[in-house]
Length: 490
Image 1: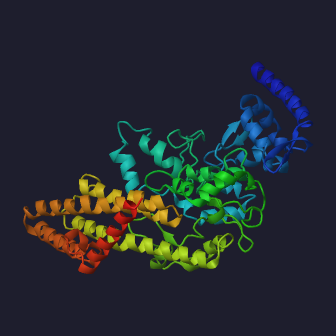
Image 2: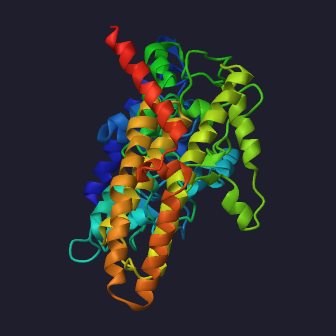
Image 3: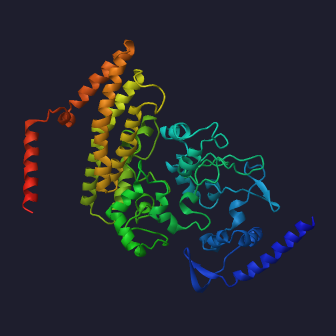
């Protein structure tokens, strides 16, 4: 009891010093502290003790909050962290009920429209990956959910997949988050209150900075790497080059932040996918300007699955018009139209030449018993996964964001090599082994080989069989001669 009384006295003294210090604090303009000016930071009565104590225990956290717009509006600790009795993650701290996790539902008390848009987005559903092949890799092939597990969860998933996609946050009887599922700021995190998402995934607590959310690096935490290198693609593109060279002119703290009005130097990820123009408001639904989905083995228009399920969604044509509206703030309509013609042709090439045929053959082999039901236990499954999940995505994403090296050498070149040099011979080998087993499996193998031959005899694959037309051979020979002559002259 005596120790508790002393503790309260100490906290009270610290509070007095802290409140006195607020009288001389520097002003905040936007998200920046401006030296020499005064601005009042507002702290509610319920948050004063929190700020005073954490100024000592975690000063950087308090400094970040002081640099936020929240601090100017009187939104402090308890305005976000206060919990109600009966909430699954509520626990008593210094005589009040609090929750560690601030969910989108909490943020919606002030930001309802932003939350509604986010909940309708693909980001909000990013945590629903348990049945995906990616999660099979993390939980089974790479990881373990038994002997080497963390509270029944694979460490590969906990530290990898979930940190981008989001965990299903579990809490103890005392209301404290389970370390196997927290800390986590995955964009599709499933929170104890049932809401989906994490606002701090982009805005970064406790400053909740517009500048941070608008930085391409903020998106790059997740959108990078061999299977979806959007950040690297952006950096290769002229858009990314311009941003790096002219960042000081980007006016990243502006509100509103309209391309062509508040800044003209370069676009960022937020510019194209979320930010306002003179005709469009800011959106937290990142799919509202995307017309193709480039994630699956075969690309389709973004609304295709919803239409198949009988759902009413915004048509892909509208979404494309939304993105084109952004593009025309820097480019002519003809330029934008030409880009989309080129982009669509790249997606159609990938789909028709590689994506659809390989997906069809794999399905035939699975259904015919040529491949086992176990995921990733055969070389051909890895080959197919690399083809669409890594190389195929890189080709498609490179084309979508104007990065030629990713479209070609990290994309279509590797897709072609994977198809002709690995997928085709591995398919033949698997079928020849299956033929020896006889019965239904042998019959299925013959059907696959027949289908493979039919695919390879299409015009786009005939070169591989030595069946290139005479006209095409002559055209290639003439082009090769011109190429050699040009370099010989140098």
